[in-house]
Length: 321
Image 1 (cartoon, rainbow, N blue to C red):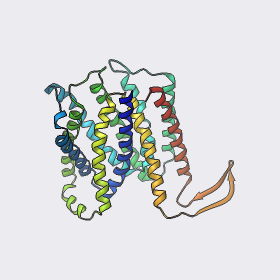
Image 2: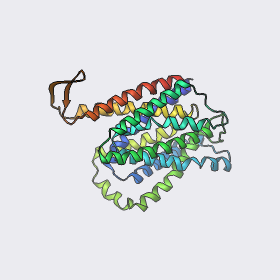
Image 3: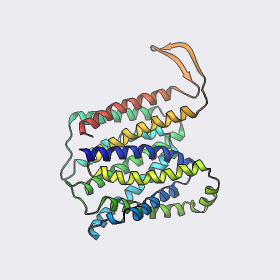
Image 4: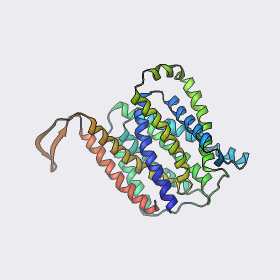
């Protein structure tokens, strides 16, 4: 129980940092394939340098079995960057709440399926309804384009997490590879298609010019995304070996929701003071007070996030996370 708490807490901390710094990094360095490749190569290099003695791969068969995970791990990272680039953070966080519903259905097919109850299913269905309510209120065409990336990211994440759980859990069908070993495989092999994609999309020739125009703060954002990327790669493997894929995805969503709240507070603290005007009119018992730049859609967004937070917390308590 203590190990599960430590692994979950570490992953949630890294998940919040990765969400925020990835959002800043992709704005400072707008070449998503190259950015993901940099993060993966940094993680691989650090693992080889500092954890060489703990690297263990039992057999070639174990290596080949784990290689099934690599395409989905890579696709999850890239689609996450593209989702953050094309959509607001709130939309990404809200729609990712739907992923546990897919994971819980896949895990029912395991040799030792995860036990579920009606309350757990009900909570996830309500999250699904909340996500649908949020999407129905999205009217910005650019946000609608981002929804596609969010759903693709969620689908890939479900496959990735269910595969990792199946190959890591002692009560399923585990591989004989150390945690540092699978983390190294994910990042080292995953960087290869990322570099090919960066070359195919014409990003590589533009990297040098983009690096010269980056400020010190931009470099800090990119560097921190690499450092936290290493942390989230290892802690994700660690936590996934201890809890179900469904619980893991619930934990991710809870952490990212709080990350969005912290990011919004940070922006509010650094932004110029906004003018607030009250109309004095009342609508359904609520006084019509609005902040410049804020719309009724933003209010609905916050309400949806609060609703998701309630049921995410309830789901985590039911699963003992």
